[in-house]
Length: 150
Ligand SMILES: [Ca+2]
Image 1 (cartoon, rainbow, N blue to C red):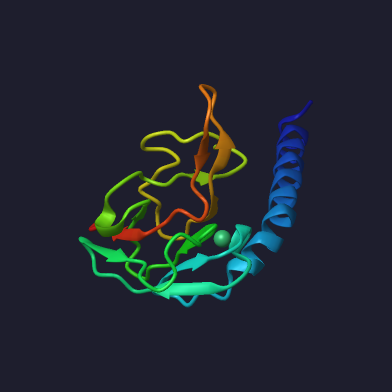
Image 2 (image 1 turned 90 degrees about the vertical axis):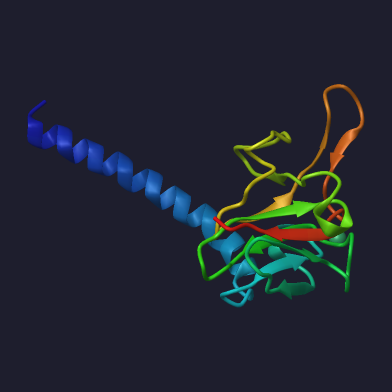
């Protein structure tokens, strides 16, 4: 195979991969698209569906979800300062750090699925059986949001 042909094959593979990714991502992004830039949005159904509630927090501070605690199934960090957020099962950012679920992350792992969640992250909270019994029941379990400084 010549260098030219090899390069063409690589481009074709990249094109296929990119195409598949774009097709898979489009419907999910459409659901989250109603979140206004600058806010963290919480949705009462999976994948950015259902009723949306928006929160504009302050960096380095906790925001309690006073209006609809324990109803969020999914979230979108659409902060305009590019900073991370974390979600807690209790008020005042106490209790359990809530994990997200994705194709790549199906377990609650410290520093991976439990955040900090970068700006631009949109995901459904984890709800999965634990190996040792019980479950990671992180949907309908958010009571507060920490707006990170970084
Ligand atoms: Ca819900």
